[in-house]
Length: 218
Length: 215
Image (tube, rainbow over the protein chains, first blue to last red):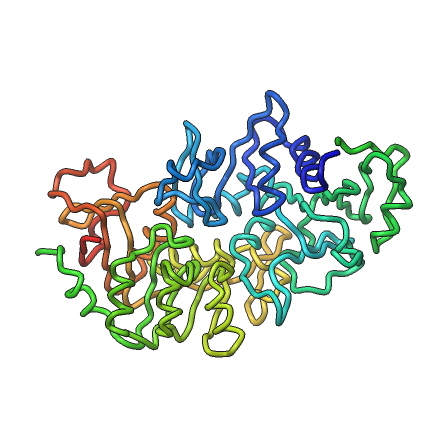
């Protein structure tokens, strides 16, 4: 059985459409490109100023003038393009990005996302995350369902400083897929072998459960 | 008019206590020779406007490690533990900007735009104390332009007029900061004759560049 990170990435990959322009964050989101179905070609956007990101280069092929948004050596596929940072974020804010996939520390029932700061502990800065969640057509949060000590990360109300207010479209964890609607969190799919109760027990807000809940891809 | 000067002559333009814009993203597209020179000369008490502070041993991080930076305006410090340490210890002031807001503030600074309304950061700590305004039912945040006394740009190639060509993602913030500094120094890999860069291939017009230094 695949590990939870791969399951999350695979289920997100299945949501993307041929021709989409997508920004993948660091960590689990980066794995999404490994699971795109046959015939689905997406263009990957790097907020540091490129479209057409491809698989990471071999160390000996790394170009010192080309990195991804995590600062790691990157490569462009034929058809790739480079541009300055104002242009890159005009793509994001201007509504040209079909989806952004990024990690989350907390998400709440109103679609608020916190993923950039833990006061007094983790102060890295928001980088491009606030622009991405404000501008992308779809904001997909890829994260493990609960924290390492088992505490829910999907909450009634985020406690950490927010990255964006009411911005999240979809949450994908190793347990389930949740869509954020104006009425609350809608359970769209659950992992094979789990019950709705299993998911609800690790989720703070009361989930809206439609008549038919799909099974996640393994 | 000769814009091509030595690294030492370029460093003479940079003074203690100034506000500098420096290009680069995670040390890609960062003017390494001039940064090394600032460290060597210990030009300090600087306010730096840049995306990030690179790494402790690379990029703008070298200025932080040498304790030459008083204040940073940036979007991210996660790749440099020394920046995080100085910030947490209260030794370094940081104003965090969403990356796109930072880029647009630079662009505005060079384009005669006093400020702009962006949807980024509405309802977050970034919005604290800032004016908001609704357009077509959506809330936007007022952000203002940024300027620098000296902008230090990294480019791949310059002609002797200062027309610049960038490579790959080393472009990032460089063309933007070149428009928003009182003095603009371009550190480049290669210097060619005027006319050797086709006008259609120029990525930043040479009118923005005051001095050119060979990396």
